[in-house]
Length: 288
View (cartoon, helix red, strand yellow):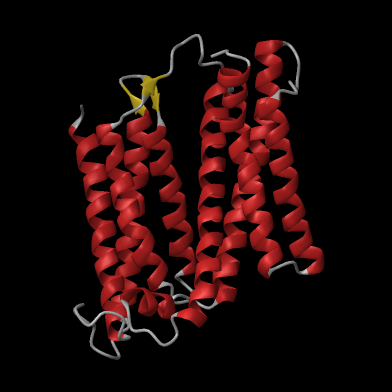
C-alpha cells in the first residue's frame, strides 16, 4: 500500500477533528458546553479557521478518495469508499452553507462521522472491478448511483433531524441537558430546510444521471434500453417522488411536514429499489 493512501485519509481525519474542535469552541462561547474551551468573545477568526480546516480536510479527503479508487492500475470500490464519498459530499455542502450562516451545531454532529468515514477505506479497501464487468459505462453508473443513494440517505437523516428538533424544541425547552443545549444551537428550521432541499436537489440530479446511464448500460449489456424489474420500478418511483417534491417546492412552496414526509417516503422507496429487489430474488424467487 502506497504511503500516500495512508497519509491522505489520516490527514483528512485530523483536519476534520481540528475543525470539529473549533466548532465546539464556537458553541462553547455561546454556552453550549461548559467543559469546552470557549473562544474569547469578539474573535471571528475562530469560525474562519474552522472553515479553513474543513476546506483543507476536504482537499485531503478528495485526494484520498481518488487515490483509493485507482490502485495498481485497477478500480477499487466498496461500501467504505461509498460511505466516505457520501460524507465528503455532506461536508462540502456544510462548508458552503457555513459561508453565509452559523451552522456549528451541524458541524459538531457531522465532522466526527466524516473523520471516521475518511479512515474506513484503509480497513475495507473494497473489491477490484474485473475486466469483464468493467464496461465503458459500468464504473460511472456504479459511482454516480452509489453517490445518489448516499446523498439521499443524508437527506433522509437530515429530515429526521428536523423532525426531532421541531419536537424537542417544545419538550426540552426547560431542560439543561447537553441534547437540549445542542438543539438550541442548531440553525433555524428555515436554514435546516434550505440544506435539506440542496441535498435533495443534488441527490435528484445524481439519481437522474444514474437512470440515464443505466438505460445506456442496459442497452449495451442486455440489448434493450430499459428492463422493468423490481429495482428499476422502485428507482423510477423514487425519482418521481423526489422530482415532484422539487417541482412542488418551486411552484407551490411545499415545505414543512409535506416536504419531510415526501423526503422520507422517497428514500424508503429508493431503499426498496435495492433491498426489496434482493429480497424478492433471494427469498421469494430463491435466486442469487
